[in-house]
Image 1 (cartoon, helix red, strand yellow):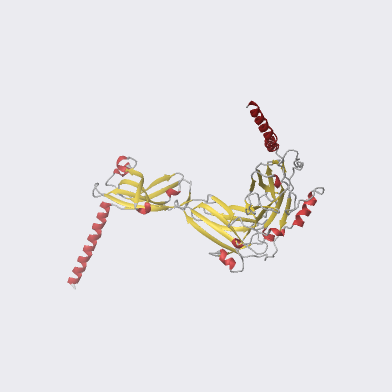
Image 2: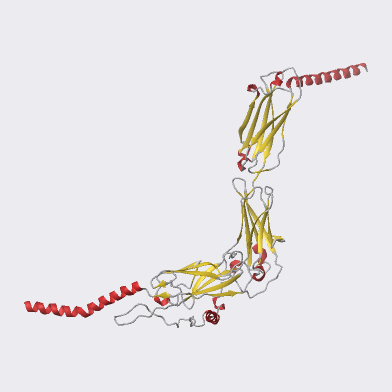
Amino acid sequence: MACFSSASKMNLLVTLCLLLCSTLMDSVKGYLTVTIEPLPPVVMGDTVTLKCNFRTDGNLREIVWFRVTEGGSSKQKIFTYDAMYNTNFSHMEDFRRREDLVYQSTVRLPEVQMEDNGPYECHVGIYDRASRDKVVLASGSITLAVMSPPKSISVIAADQPARFNRYEAQNFTLMCIVTGGKPAPVVYFKRDGELIEVVPSDKPHEAAESRGLFSARESRPLISRDLDDTKLQKSLSLLEPDVEPVRLDNVRPHQSNTPGALGQEGPQPTTEIIPETVVSREFPRWVLSSSPLYYFNHTQTEFSDGTMEVQAMLTWHLNPQLDNDALFSCEVKHPALSMPMQAEVTLSAPKGPKLSMTPSRAKVGDTVRIAVEGFQVGTKGNEVFPEPLFTWTRVGGLLLDGSAEREGKVLILERVPAELNGSMYRCTAENPLGSTNTHTRLIVFENPRMKKETLQFNVADSGEELFGPTFMMLLLSVTLEFT
């Protein structure tokens, strides 16, 4: 019993000795704790201050700040403080004084950019209390998250320009493109200021087709016979009652401005210089539901600087009668924005192309340029969305180059002949919301310069025919007389 009591006392004494030694060693070595104050995500362009707090009872040796790059494989030194060559901490020179001191080291990063995003480390070193040749090190780290607000936002129509289909319904897709945001923004659509309830879908076109809808790519081409000759002649008669309407077939007699031999009279020049313009609007021949389903899909692409590009697509069953003049907006929410960013478009069918012709007084041999300069009537500054498809045709015949139609905003007729005088040209502007036609008549005047050159050429030919044999007979007779 006595032995057990002696052993217990011995163990207690050993334990107390170890604790005392540990306390003594700790008082000699000192201690050091390092923490960095957390930071919320910051916006690109802001000034950021990193704060490193450390507590110690030893003597400070140095403070070093690092920026960690290349995924942690490399460190870039951005700040260094060496207490050996700085007297700011002279109060720590009392080596025998034991005191808990709290210090703070700050690093200011002005106007942070995306390349400043990433981890930062604060390394602190103090002298070992047992030997000033030894340094005790500790460190803390923080990840700086730099946010970038979206730089641009735009709304476009996918798969455009496209033809108008009056017999089959089409799918229509609006695409909202947002670039430059980090993290990725939240994108949503509104119609006439009301948030659209959407159905998420990875493939909105396939989802729409499964419900009996048809893609815009499968739309059938415009049938030009819907605008018949009777409608055109009636429109022309209303514009100019005193002028005989132009025939739409090839029965119109052709006039030639190329004179023949001497004594033949050429055609008289026309005095009409204002082209006739007729506008016709076409409407769909089917009725759709007034409550379509909107399918939503979006994709994200990350750039090398960490910013994102988001493409959000809204697809639905287009109803030209209800969707025409509807206001659709794409709005973006992002933590770096104080208010939503938005872009809006108004769906609008073309209202009739406004055409211009140069030169205004075309002559035989000139190059005529007929261009679309806008629209006859339009909403919001004469804008049409989506961008219409323009098609040129010649009423009752082929174009000058032999083609049946040509696409584009400009029709160029090179070296127009006199036979094109009075010919009618149709410009069709169409988008998925509707189609419209504008007709203009080409008036070709005589070209005095070409007429003069033709006359000189004919006179020369006639001179050769009249004086050639006589001159040869005279020359032959003089030759015989001398011989």
